[in-house]
Amino acid sequence: VLNNIILFSSYEYMQKHYCWPSLSGMKESNSETYSGVKYVAEFVTSLDLPSRVLAKSNVRKGVVGDWKNTLSCEQSQRLTEKFLEKAKDTDIKNWFSEAI
Image (cartoon, rainbow, N blue to C red; front, top):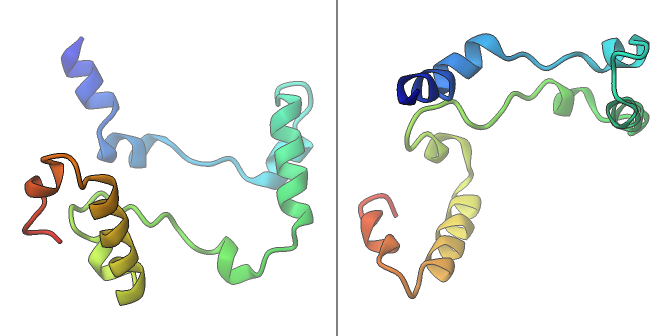
Protein backbone atom coordinates (compact mmCIF):
# COMPACT_ATOMS: atom_id res chain seq x y z
CA VAL A 1 0.00 0.00 0.00
CA LEU A 2 2.78 2.42 0.92
CA ASN A 3 4.54 1.79 -2.40
CA ASN A 4 1.31 2.64 -4.26
CA ILE A 5 0.92 5.84 -2.27
CA ILE A 6 4.48 6.84 -3.08
CA LEU A 7 4.08 5.91 -6.75
CA PHE A 8 0.72 7.56 -7.39
CA SER A 9 1.47 10.73 -5.42
CA SER A 10 4.87 11.40 -6.96
CA TYR A 11 5.30 14.57 -8.94
CA GLU A 12 6.46 12.65 -12.02
CA TYR A 13 3.39 10.39 -12.00
CA MET A 14 0.98 13.30 -11.66
CA GLN A 15 2.69 15.29 -14.43
CA LYS A 16 2.49 12.28 -16.77
CA HIS A 17 -1.05 11.11 -16.01
CA TYR A 18 -3.01 14.23 -15.16
CA CYS A 19 -4.14 16.80 -17.65
CA TRP A 20 -6.61 19.62 -17.15
CA PRO A 21 -9.68 19.36 -19.34
CA SER A 22 -10.15 22.32 -21.58
CA LEU A 23 -12.80 24.82 -20.56
CA SER A 24 -14.47 24.63 -23.95
CA GLY A 25 -14.68 20.85 -23.60
CA MET A 26 -16.32 21.24 -20.20
CA LYS A 27 -18.98 23.59 -21.52
CA GLU A 28 -19.88 21.23 -24.37
CA SER A 29 -20.12 18.21 -22.08
CA ASN A 30 -23.64 17.11 -21.23
CA SER A 31 -24.65 15.43 -18.00
CA GLU A 32 -21.15 14.03 -17.46
CA THR A 33 -19.93 17.32 -16.04
CA TYR A 34 -21.11 18.46 -12.63
CA SER A 35 -23.06 21.70 -12.57
CA GLY A 36 -20.41 23.33 -10.34
CA VAL A 37 -17.67 22.53 -12.84
CA LYS A 38 -19.80 23.92 -15.67
CA TYR A 39 -20.36 27.11 -13.67
CA VAL A 40 -16.63 27.53 -13.02
CA ALA A 41 -15.85 26.93 -16.70
CA GLU A 42 -18.39 29.54 -17.80
CA PHE A 43 -17.21 32.01 -15.16
CA VAL A 44 -13.54 31.68 -16.12
CA THR A 45 -14.29 32.13 -19.82
CA SER A 46 -16.38 35.20 -19.02
CA LEU A 47 -13.40 36.87 -17.29
CA ASP A 48 -11.75 37.59 -20.65
CA LEU A 49 -8.25 37.01 -19.30
CA PRO A 50 -5.26 38.19 -21.32
CA SER A 51 -3.69 35.44 -23.42
CA ARG A 52 -0.40 35.73 -21.50
CA VAL A 53 -2.19 34.65 -18.32
CA LEU A 54 -3.86 31.68 -19.99
CA ALA A 55 -0.55 30.55 -21.51
CA LYS A 56 1.24 30.35 -18.15
CA SER A 57 2.03 26.96 -16.69
CA ASN A 58 2.23 26.05 -13.05
CA VAL A 59 4.97 27.61 -10.97
CA ARG A 60 5.82 24.26 -9.43
CA LYS A 61 8.16 22.22 -11.59
CA GLY A 62 9.00 19.56 -9.02
CA VAL A 63 12.53 20.85 -8.50
CA VAL A 64 13.57 21.69 -4.96
CA GLY A 65 14.64 25.33 -4.68
CA ASP A 66 13.43 26.28 -8.17
CA TRP A 67 11.31 29.06 -6.68
CA LYS A 68 14.51 31.16 -6.69
CA ASN A 69 14.45 31.13 -10.50
CA THR A 70 10.74 31.91 -10.70
CA LEU A 71 10.10 34.61 -8.09
CA SER A 72 11.38 38.16 -8.23
CA CYS A 73 13.68 39.44 -5.46
CA GLU A 74 10.76 41.29 -3.87
CA GLN A 75 8.53 38.20 -3.96
CA SER A 76 11.32 36.06 -2.54
CA GLN A 77 11.87 38.53 0.29
CA ARG A 78 8.14 38.64 1.12
CA LEU A 79 8.01 34.84 1.11
CA THR A 80 11.00 34.65 3.47
CA GLU A 81 9.49 37.25 5.82
CA LYS A 82 6.16 35.43 5.87
CA PHE A 83 7.87 32.10 6.56
CA LEU A 84 9.95 33.55 9.40
CA GLU A 85 6.85 35.19 10.89
CA LYS A 86 4.85 31.95 10.81
CA ALA A 87 7.74 29.83 12.12
CA LYS A 88 9.10 32.25 14.73
CA ASP A 89 8.14 30.13 17.75
CA THR A 90 9.15 26.79 16.24
CA ASP A 91 12.31 24.92 15.32
CA ILE A 92 11.17 24.62 11.71
CA LYS A 93 12.99 27.78 10.66
CA ASN A 94 16.26 26.14 11.74
CA TRP A 95 15.66 23.30 9.29
CA PHE A 96 15.73 25.76 6.40
CA SER A 97 18.44 28.14 7.61
CA GLU A 98 20.62 27.44 4.55
CA ALA A 99 17.77 28.06 2.12
CA ILE A 100 16.73 31.43 3.51
